[in-house]
Image (cartoon, rainbow, N blue to C red):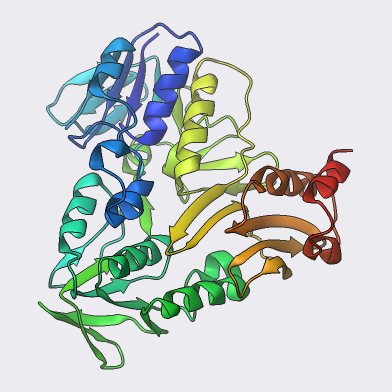
Length: 403
């Protein structure tokens, strides 16, 4: 059996590594468009961009590892077509490669804006290298989009001594992800570090050293960073006739509408067995976890991807971890600790159930938070008073849910 992996991504390499650790000895061919070895993306907007990590630290494995694992790694090569009937993929030099099972791990690309000037996007290693070189002391940096990437870039730019302005169409940063209560904390975090926000605004135009907002405001901008989301790379799947809807549609075991084609990582829109809904997640931990699970699915094991979404972010002196899913909304946010001091846990509740939790500068609580979310998905309800009370151990609430 030959397994072809389209995408030399973090998800793809985790799948390949797990295939070998599960005892698969057949051919594995991993095909990636980029010239670089598979790498981790978080340092591109965090440690490497800040200057605290070396570039070599982003790579998952050295080149020799792929040889040692007998994984055929084809870099600077793009899969251009899939023939499900013939079980082949075509690459950009015209060659065809046969497969028994195919894994799509093609990731996503940044949404682009039609702008002039010194414009940067942050998705790959070379993007991060170029942006890091541009973040010089005193540079005027305009960040378009106040999502996670935009805010992490803003924090890195301030650490390099840049003047930073963030333009966001919404009324707060991260509001659609975190809601007003916690989004306000992140706004205040950045303003306290000298970042200027323009909310409810969009960019009307840009030039070499400035951008113009839709209300006519002109902002100095020798560096423009666009962080307005990403688009899943689903064209291969769509052209091959696979089901596509906000990503590649897969089952809970990450199988597409073709039983011999699988998908994981940013592109997978999967049926979550615990949350009872379809979700697609664009974060590092999903790439790792889905890559590992899909490998077992490729081998015919009876698996279901019930991982609870998780991500983390470090901005200035505020480190955070978040787990959960509020896609269907929430009713209240309960704080344990001091939001003002930025040492707290926040819980998002709906009908008395914990649907998400985030710890900021409070550590070693994620296991309990995730267990609470899992128990809540199975019906556990928790009082807001108990969640807010630091005298009530999260472990006791977690154990109540597992009893």
